[in-house]
Length: 134
Image (cartoon, rainbow, N blue to C red; front, side):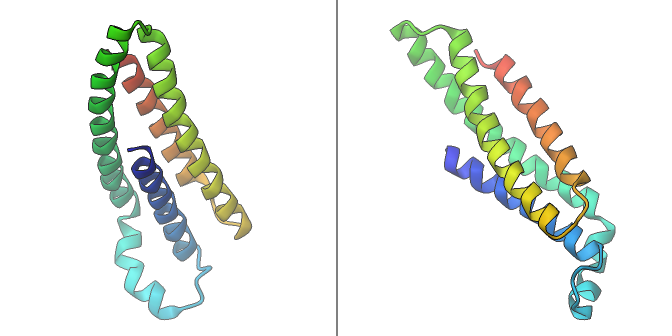
């Protein structure tokens, strides 16, 4: 489940990077810019819509974690440490994906605003789901 989440984050941040790359004219291909112009007009809406896919996957991960919590509590583990480990695993994957995205953006001198906003939204979502884990 964690590798799927990593793949989703990397794919999502890559899509943000690709939109920034094409939008800022770094792509020298006129054909690429011409065909992707309609997508670039709705870039924010597309990224928000695709973030719902990541949120749904996170929710499925949370449901699996709830079953794990029940089993761990039966064994004697504490709920607060389970929440901490869940949040730590998710934030570690998010940070790894974010660092790769920032490195790609900075290597091509692209704007990193979208990636920072996405990271902030996902970090808030992870914190909220960790608090809801019971």
